[in-house]
Length: 248
Image 1: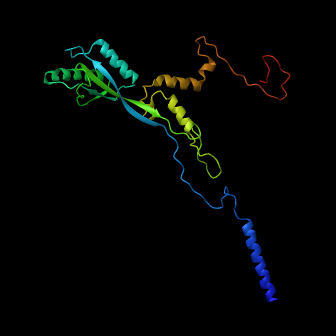
Image 2 (image 1 turned 90 degrees about the horizontal axis):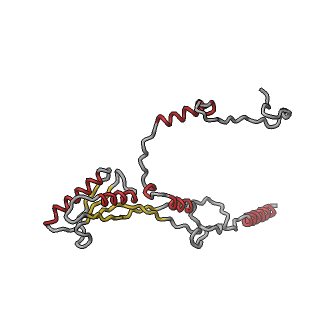
Image 3 (image 1 turned 30 degrees about the horizontal axis):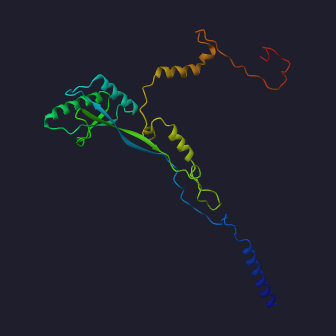
């Protein structure tokens, strides 16, 4: 009797091992343990600032700007979106001792014109000999440009796959690229702009008209208003037709 009990236990053990072996995970796509992976950073646009220059020309011997040069400076600033609160750099040509006073007066003239527009001016060291003309001042601003992120699977062949044979793709790349193509001023992606002064009275009037439904009641200025009458769907009022239907 004791041997039969040992034999039965042995066979039950073998059966349990076989059952566990049959239930083991053989599918590489299925896991029976917790798995954690650091999420890849989302794709982002990169904004870079690069210098852009404008040559300011003075008449020989003059220290004041002509009207044409003043207009050219204004047009350059507008094209590069340089406004109040931003910074530009002025660079003067290398000059001898006899020209130092004249160059200094020209720098003061240009600096005064820019500061009148709220633009901060930084003075750069004199340019290398031969870089600028003797009657020129170099105005340097900064232009922002956008670099699109790499999007595998969108603009190049897929070369890597995950455990489920799905391509590894940076989700959100298309949105970032579309944003980079649509933005008018790339610097807006880095820093916002100061809002213009708002008309509080006009905004409050719009809210008041909405709350009092002034447009529905008519403002007496001759403008016609449209009233929306709800229509009863279904029910027993199907016999009424024409403009006066519905119960009161």
